Length: 431
Figure: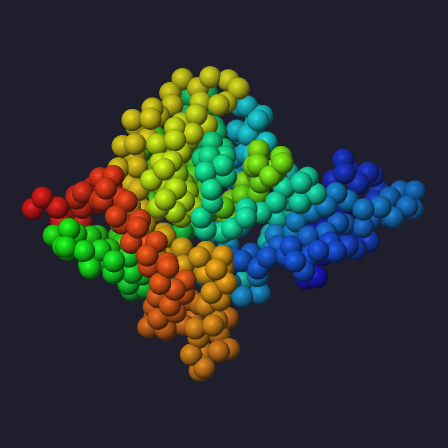
């Protein structure tokens, strides 16, 4: 265990007398028996599962509640974004959620218990650790897959999302100045991370055009879509920048996908969930969360069958707070938000969906596609752009390209791609 993490745990035991009692001393960290299986190494964090062993004032050796230690990885996907991610997550757990809970306590039912966080900054680097409840001990499980879920899981996801978004509208009514101060303090993360890979995004986005190009009914609209895809980075950045002035803007999760929630089941049916990984929280249109669920965790068959019901479920979640909220977006407003901004989800899907599909289908990680001369590389961001493009287009296989094509066709059918003036890039479908 890193010395920084060990020192943080010693400080935690010393200060949290409500958990450990007075005059208790840190002894060690007892890793979970399933830690090797449970521990995850994401692009920007590593999770360690276990309990703190400590000696109380009577000399007895005891164990803390089961914890997750979320720390920085040895190798970061995008090192310059790493500190901002931890700043965001600590700020949400330490300030925004307590603020929401002061207005209405049930917000805490949506998240794991937060215990503490510690940071240490050096001239050229930084370290951070966040201590959270281990949800597995409370019966929560990961989603059955990373990519596409059934209606029961999706319904629970969008209802819970609607409830989370409703706290932003409640805060706007009851304490608008504090809400604005907190919300505007969040750093957009997904945009800067993707923008780090210059020239990669338009190529990834074009992957979904392959199927459309073979069909005559899409021939006239392909140039319009291609123009949007060529400007994907500008569209993405504009959405993060401009949506702060949207009257319906909320504190978004920013990466609300099945990999960042855990479900509790009753006889195999999902009945509750907890949301985690709050590093990408940002202040923007609620569509930045809702559209991701509808396009990255639902396949086309599910969208065809349940689109209207899922939007209704989201709206039901918006109105589910124990106390009334006077000004909530209507279903028509939610639909208009989707019509003007859901294209964002395609941009994100073109970059990330291949990873989810590859994991679910056992198609291998990006290391599988590394040329021999780059076999030692552990950081995607360090590869030449040409190699990044080649790996991304291979990852997830042909099935990913088909899913991206389905997303474009669905957006065209629903009128979500109708002109580019909505993105201020000067190309109109009617011109």
